[in-house]
Length: 639
Image 1: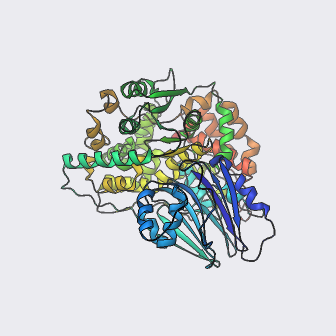
Image 2: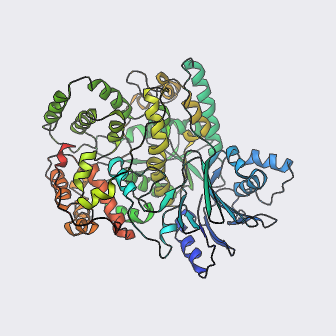
Image 3: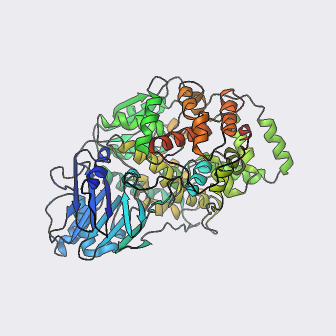
């Protein structure tokens, strides 16, 4: 695992230290080796976390004839097969690392090589004779690639800071990014929260040649459910696919472990990994004394598979505020997903023992594991109830006692009833999001409302693939890469840890896209096929339990241990200096939550992270927007 950065300079360049400065800013992604490569046209930098062939494989890597240079972040799991094919075609290798295999594959097949890769990757190839730069990102977006244009030049990197650190680059807040962030808790690609910076979308490559840019998809997810698919046959195929994916992703020349939450997904990975590894190391986060603590389940998994188990108890004395402040640097682009905090501590403890971990990420989006998919179904039925009655029920629900539960009954009922008032797409996004459209506008002054005007919402893909599959497809396109995988990459790489998600082997994703909906969710049973496959292998309580969610008690902690940080961050001066938020509206949200009139912890977490990030990186509103505005108040307790 590594970090990459670079930029072109068509009109000459006189600052050779800049690429070194930017490359060093990514050292956490690759503390084992750093270097740069420059020509009159381009500067490339790479930092390396050594995983395969520890003695060789330094980057940037230059081809033997000097015509191509590669900087690469990721792992190519089928590099051995590709290498054998390339040797038959006449290629000669000096190392055993997948970086060299990738370089030779590009020299042989150019952009057609990307279809042959199985793995997670973000890479940049420079062809010296053609003055041509090619960027590429893996199919599911496990590894990040950011880019920006200024005049005819292009800037890129594994993290936003690789672009933000260029002098003269305006650090302006993106209206499109803010529009999505406040609604969804993340920013779906290709947008970011910084004006002028984009994400290269998963499954795409980008070519820069003499100032001209073109982009193309080399892989697209396609749902073609086969309603004739038999349960037994599907179970058998999934078993083979999972075993092969886990086997491939355990390969490393450094210690490897597994993140274990005690849930179905991570326990499945532990099961298959135990077939290939003795004394497997597992890592978990507990919340001792809390109702949602999962320690009985992951300890049972550790006992059954006799793993070398390590856990960290995340509690108010864990240094939470310090971690939140550090995350502003490593996150780069904020995510309002409060699950980033336990992932931060999980990564920290894991790195004391291993360099690579496997995780169960992706199974929920691929096989249908979120309760939000049931909420979509329930809301569909609720819409048959007259709207005035639903609004009345929503008013009644707000009378329920406000609890400190992570996601209590009061929160679930209020969100379901509010979501039932929305169109299906808006409702689905609202389940995992925070502010509705009206609440979001109410947070802003006139300048902020102007900034957000004119941005189109996401579109629901597919029409004939089934009601559930359309939402799964949407989440795999956006929520998975831009929230779940983003969170995993930033929090783990902050601690120089590589995380591999076997469920996102593209063969498994394509297999799931061909499944009928009743093999994903049947009745109230989520991830039906996976659960059916594992029911006689994992402990019964693990298979039968409902998903808890890897999250923090945001409502409670923002009223207690994180309250000083919250009030220091969202104070009147900071809100007014933002130029776009209304202080009376923000103050109303704060008071409604702190005075226990509503549970708005997740809303406030997103605002806390956003303001911390803007302060740390000096992000400001665009100067062209109208700034003088009357404040607009909002009662956030309606959410």
